[in-house]
Image (cartoon, rainbow, N blue to C red; front, side, top):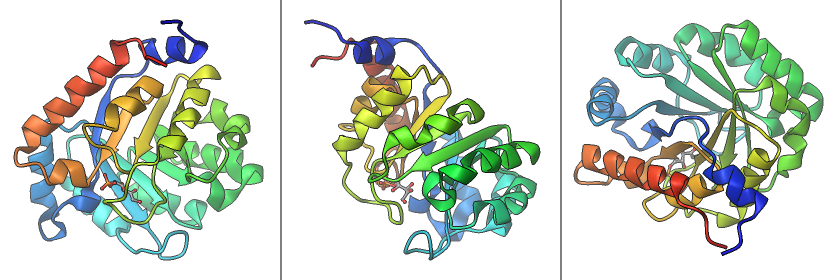
Length: 240
Ligand SMILES: O=C(CO)[C@H](O)[C@H](O)COP(=O)(O)O
């Protein structure tokens, strides 16, 4: 089977595989317990979905809850800001203990993406991320890739868990690796045992999963299964 540039990029060992369960699917009445349970089960990061009822049609978590999670978590808090004014609220999330802090390109536009990434960095955020929705062209990120540590490719329209994975966004992940982007490429939305290997084969290393993980009867076994699938997809040559 002939291999392409995408194959080469996707099978090159890059950043480590990161399994990041989405707390959106957890029991909000017992968040501390859920964090401890996820860590005992082998989660690498805790994915925290912040929604403002404006950028997305849902409301979830704010800085006080992130601060509460930070008191319990020993693994990084991967905070995904699905909000219209990321710069306004970033200091509160940094103070609350976000390790990864990701804003949306659509919220700030290309003209403000670089200054937003720099502002996040100046707040002491160790992993600065930028995200795009399924209908946003990945090329719009070109001018900011040198300033971010992570790109989050949404594989559903943000707002709710439990939606179907959109395979058409995989080409964006491939494009990022073809550009030589060596940071984390995270994918989020509809990831399960079938779709996760596709993400990794395309070049993703950070894998967010909510409903598929939380509905599993054995969380630790499912996380281990996801990790095995990811490692396998990373080393296996992709078939076209
Ligand atoms: O960002 C999100 C929704 O906007 C969630 O993180 C995402 O949808 C994960 O949930 P699931 O695995 O159930 O799709």
